[in-house]
Figure 1 (spheres, rainbow, N blue to C red):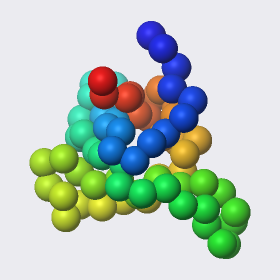
Figure 2 (cartoon, rainbow, N blue to C red):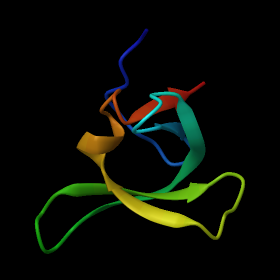
Figure 3 (cartoon, rainbow, N blue to C red):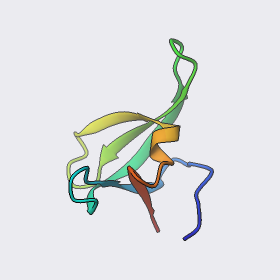
Figure 4 (cartoon, rainbow, N blue to C red):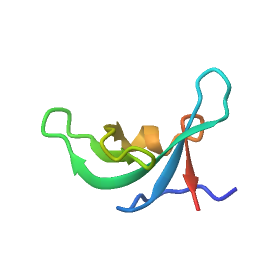
Length: 72
């Protein structure tokens, strides 16, 4: 498996279920930004099946294979 090191707008990721370890929801990167509060990089994600479901995730979390997998 190839490790992703760069995240781009439009890229898709599947969250990994905490209990089952199986892929759960699929999200698409809508934007990338740096927080003015903690100076960390974040990605704004929208759920593929419900685009009104939006969340912001730290890039380090998004790149963690235990929490998210890139969808090709």
